[in-house]
Amino acid sequence: MSDLKVQDRLRDIRKKVEAGERLTFDDGLFLYDPNVPLQDVGALANWMRERMHGSVAYYNINTHLNPTNVCVYRCRFCAFRSDLRDPKGYVMSEEQILQRGKEAIENGCTEMHIVGGLHHQLGYDWYRGILSTLHQAYPQLHLKGWTAVEINWFEFLTKKSLRDILSDLRDAGLGSLPGGGAEIFHSEVRSQLCEHKANSHKWVEVHRTAHQIGIKSNCTMLYGSIENAYHRIDHLSRLRELQDETGGFQTFIPLAFHPDNTKLSHIPKPTALMDLRTMAVARLFLDNVPHIKAYWIMLGIETAQVALSYGADDIDGTVRHELIYHDAGATTPQMLTVEQIKRLIAETGRVPVERDTLYREVHRSPDNLSQWHIGEPVAVSV
Ligand code: V47
Image (tube, rainbow, N blue to C red; front, side, top):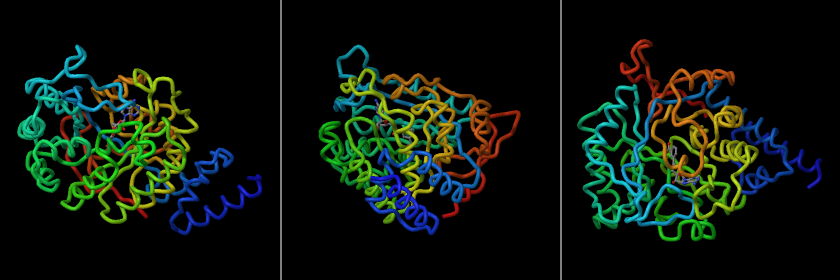
């Protein structure tokens, strides 16, 4: 495409974005074309991000819990999983899980992000019990737990309907669903990455059912492995369609593939340019998803900072005990302090605002991290 044609097409897309019109599948493909200057795509995404969120960038104070890494599936991109009899395999005890809850509360966390493997020998009650144990002991901690893949596994274990399972988990203490397990929906890619686990229709059905009964969720896309731009836009289109129907997604998190210690270790990690382009295209294409998250653990701190001007308005949280990315070679720190996360946001010229998992503002005593209360939902202009 000539430079002139690129500029003409970009001008048309700019007009659409400014008028609040939806981008087409072809627009999405065009924005992924390397001949389209990244800074132009980024500037447009930043314009949209500022229209929606002004100069604010959100963060939370959170921790992770991966109660087991033993998994019946063998996803080719995963460095975290373990076989049943592998010495690396572990299952946390109730005492260890409660200890994590205690540590979270002492450090002011409002959220615990809980995901793990699908253990060959543990039943549904074990997974449900983790939520109920933590919720009873620490009811103020929001439990964002179990991806659509685990929920689908619970269907297999219990033979109950999705609606019954999700309602039962909510009774046990589930607050919302994380966005994991989406990977790339298109079967050409999914069948190579994770042949056996929940397919795209199931992933969508789990989130649709959660939204229908009032459980909010997040959505993700694993990019930079074996997929192409067509597969990525197809993925975003399916998320946009479900969001039109339910409005239950809070935030989209693009997840860059980390190859170390995986079955795809020969594939290079996506570059920062690809990370930023994906962030910007996601902001522009997912016009109905309120937040776009630059997950610093996976992007690296510097790219996450830049991403706050390429469409992202959220940087995830302080994080503790992250394993999935660190097992796959992430070199980011294990956690940030509240002061560090605020400073890295402020350095970008954005205003750091603490939110809880459901995007309500958190007000905290400056001298005592563990004293906080939840305020109003944050404002988003569409
Ligand atoms: O489902 C696993 C991905 C996901 C690798 O909802 C990998 O707020 C890259 O979903 N390289 C889990 N990606 C993480 C996740 C997430 C993270 C932060 C916030 C939220 C949220 C959700 O990580 C998996 C998979 O898509 N993943 N291994 C890897 N080697």
